[in-house]
Each structure stands twice: as C-alpha cells, then as structure tokens.
Amino acid sequence: MIIKQIVFSLLLLFIIFFALRVVYGLLVFMFKRNTSAMYVPSFNRHIRLMKDNLKLVRWKKLVDLWCGDGKAMRFFFRTFGVYCDGYEIQYFPYLYGKILNKLLWYPDLRLLKNDFLIADIHGYDYIYVYLLPQQMAAIEDWIFKRMNTDAIIISNSFQFAVHTPYDVIKDKKWKPSIYLYKKD
Image (cartoon, rainbow, N blue to C red; front, side, top):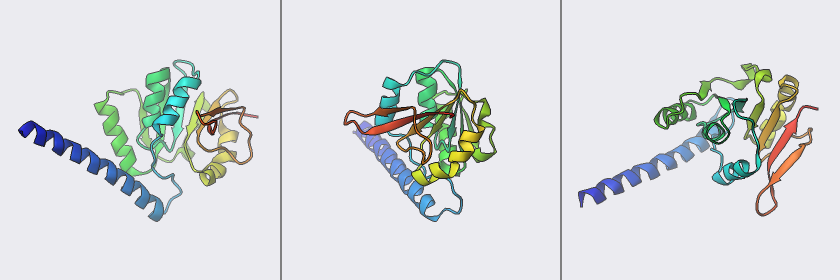
C-alpha cells in the first residue's frame, strides 16, 4: 500500500512539474520584454525524423540557438556524437537543462545562459534552430553572414523567409518538418 502511494505521489509530482513547465513557458512568452524564443522542447516525432534521416559527422561541432533545456543537444550528442553548445537566455529552461545534463550524465554538453547573438558561430559545423517564423526572419541575415561556408543549418518545423533549403525532410504524412540550409 505504501509503495502504491509513493508511486502515485511521484507520478503526481511529475505531472504537476510538466504542467507548470508549460504554463511557465506560455506566461514568459506572453509577458516577456526581450525577443527570446518561447520555451518549447523539440517534439519526439521531429527527433525520430532527424534520427532516421540526418547523417551528421562524429566529433564535429553543433550549436543550438535558443536551446531551451537542451533536449535537442542531448539527442545530437547521443545519436551522432557531435560536440554541442547551446545558448538560452531564459532562466528556467537553462537551469532545468543544467540539472538534466548532470542527472543524465552529459558533462560534455555546454549550456550557456547568454544571448547567442554574442556568439561566434563561424566555428560550428552544424547550427540547429527551432524558432517561430518571425524569429527566423529576424536572425536570417545575421546567421547567414556569420556561419561557416561549409556549415549546415538544421531548422526544425519552420523555414527562413528568403533563403531556400537545399533539402527538406518530410514526415509520414509528407508534411515538411526539417529544413536543411547551406550558405549561398
């Protein structure tokens, strides 16, 4: 009986935590003063789609812009063996990601609480973005001017306004889901 109560209590705590995480993300997005992205972790269906279709080179470097809790970074490191840096400006996703990285033993992932606009992205081989269309449009010139000529941008769900992807990965319903870009 006690074990059932403990399991039920833990399950209830997890449900409350994840519900608060979503509510926090919505509230911060609605009332924020900066231009940071809303905290929404990458969906598992997109993670599976990338796992099945991307061919990233081991030991290369990836940067995740506005990475949230680093879910995509953990995926890229675990699946492809790439070194990952992530930039997050909001405190809750940053702290949650740091805790997860410690608990799940990802000591090589660098989660930085900073605006990525100060970062030198020229040294990265892969750039991952999961941003809304207006945020994609706002950083499009910045990212294409500063990226390495051989770098690949992996955009989850949304595409850039001006640049054309060189490849589009579609889901089972043939809806475009992952957009891949290279420097013109």
